[in-house]
Length: 455
Image 1 (cartoon, rainbow, N blue to C red):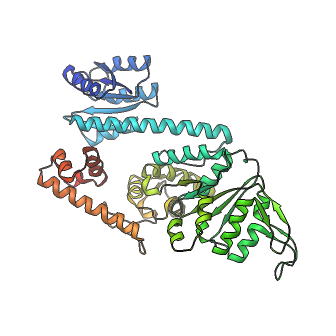
Image 2 (image 1 turned 120 degrees about the vertical axis):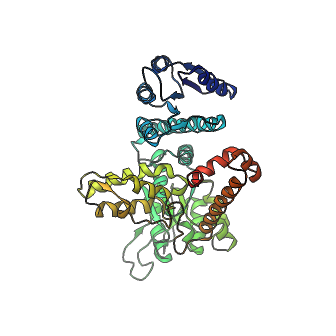
Image 3 (image 1 turned 180 degrees about the horizontal axis):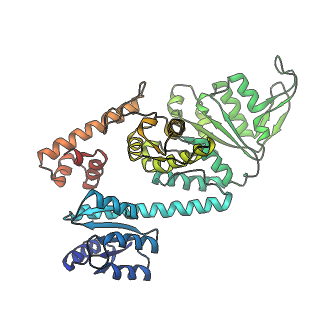
């Protein structure tokens, strides 16, 4: 179980916090002031430190700085009876995970402790994954510390070492090709070719020629032999993006290649053996296309031996600041512009926007902002995104049913929670019982929909 250090000068509060944590199974040590707490942190590693803000000799802000200097992986929660926004901001700038205003509900504290420890574990796992990837191929292209992205990276590492076919699923703009390249780069095939083909961008006749090649005279205008991409990628990897757009007749030929490991050029009579790993990707629901007779079920099962779903950007909003910083640095360098930073208002807008175009749309927005921004700060006026209100996502024109449904569900949940909270006079425990959800789920939704701020 996690090790927690509680630093609090008031004995009654110190004992209450420690006892509450120990009853939940945590290993807890206490300190009566900042210097004592710092000495204990130097002596052994702690997963989490909970410290009071106002203490003799050393205040909570100095404790946060010292703890983070000793071990940057230790999460810190600051408690204070002086719950001002300025104090919270100062604590966050020093590296605190969150802010707990006294008096507080012990269940709220436990929820915050759980979140801090989970966040700390995710960061640690991400660092391990990054180090492993960097050591093996010097790759730091996949940006993200979100739990869902970490899970995808773990799957990528596991499947990379085999020759298994992989099906990458996810919305347009989520970075499927980047993950495909990561699989190739982590595989024993890394020193061979990685060939990417967008099946949606090439007409059926030309796609067949691109994939399998052709002999001289195979069609009008064919004046020389053409080697197909499967042959070029022999020993390496071929990435078939937007596989759902491949013509149904061509799917049959692809299936044969996958089963027999041979290709036959257009106009040819001989077969050529190929050892090419296939990674496919689609933003369409291939199972639904099978029902509509638009995609072969035998090809689907051959391709989806190991399916991996890439999360949309709206489900990994905590990665937005890091992604934005990456693209700002990149485009400032490419355009020979002085370094720029995002204003708080621009970042807040980005974190609330629904990003239907995912990471690709974010990249395009940053590129546009770098062109328009002449100062050091990128503001909302430089971003090509708009919200209808501060707390509500405007559905884009032509939004799909899933997007419309998600938006409607969020609005209905927000309204229901506010109505029940009003009925129970703000009692969150009773509200959770009425809505038939657990307290943690309710608390997460209250924070997500910013209901407390509205009240």
